[in-house]
Image (tube, rainbow, N blue to C red; front, top):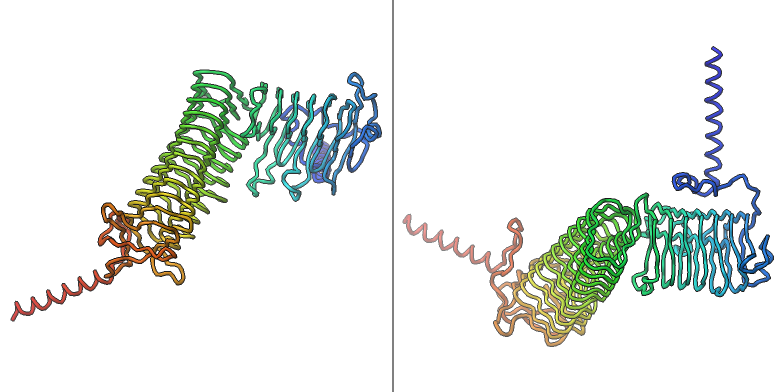
Length: 580
């Protein structure tokens, strides 16, 4: 009996402790759950008697002295800002420092705010930020403000032994020089996923001579801006993402990475690197390739990051057979040449499945790009690129959008059930041939704006809401022939399945006199095209060159029905005479 009472007493005490813990957890930021996992629990001293303030704003040496508890401002004896508990409810910054000329350290502070620590425009002194605990309020603030530590235009900075929990960025380094970042635990919160925003552990933007060493990221990893031309000054070593290695591969040749041991991979100035069979989750950039050539990325699974695979200023890469899901961008190319993107499955991207930005001679072949949420399945602003045999279906906006491109070829693709047309703006020397463009929900099948010289040939253009093809103002010297226009929804007050408001466009091939098939043509010998150009298809086809699927209930024309009806009458008359 005594034993039972003893056990009941123990259970009651445990329940009471659990209730107290839950109360304090609801008051404190969500920063304790992963601290023990990352080995930094000694920093989170909740029993210490902190100095409580709402914010620390320093814009002069006098301000710096007023908040410092120790030191004289020299390099040997810096001013020390320490032991503050900052609850930045209703303010933008917990700690903001600029325009000082004395050496200083920020250490052993507990910060809950939007921006945690922001330091700007300070040069010629040493700055240390160490052993702080930084967390954030919930996500009703502007996204850029949800950053743990931000350094802009400063030099000689050490950031070490901090625990940072953030929604958007852990550490943001902009135009900084000689930065040492080590032994930090950087945790990402998931509250911005519904906005399509992914967590970045450390962002590097034009930062020179930066060392990133022995840091642990639960997600996000390192974000290197795509236009970053100072990457050769970086030293990155012995960091982890989600308990796996963060691989920084620099100046290497003929390397194969096949074992599943990396949470993020960054490649710089390499030749013939192969990365395959990696699984990465919630990493800002899964695989990054900078200034490299002849690299291959295949059979990787990358999910829920910002960009699955990003390639910048690289040459002759191959990106094939990857599964990229729920990233903001599946694949991003920037200023690259002769890359091959093939047989990738790219699903549920927030913005673009594939984005080619000022890249040339790219081949995009046999990819499946579907269910893109906020923009186009494929977006291109390069030149001499070829898109063939891709499936771009069920994207919320355009299946394909080419913006000011030259010499593009779009051949044998499938664009179906997208929220908008296949769009071409400002193109030169465009070929659109043998594609299936069907069931798109807005602005028709093909739209060309300010295009100069193009061929639209042998495409199946079927049941799009709007004109099947629309050559808008500024579009000239296009030849449209051999296409099958079937049951596209003619806009209000329109009379045809196509529109031409450009100049000098042909709706038939002037060399072969082959026009297009128009299901609604009837008995007309020529087919009038809507629009200011007053164009005609002078040689409309009686039968389609390109047929829909076998199970499509192709509606027959009135003339064909009358022809069949006439045959039946003749047959009936003949049969009666034969009986008589």
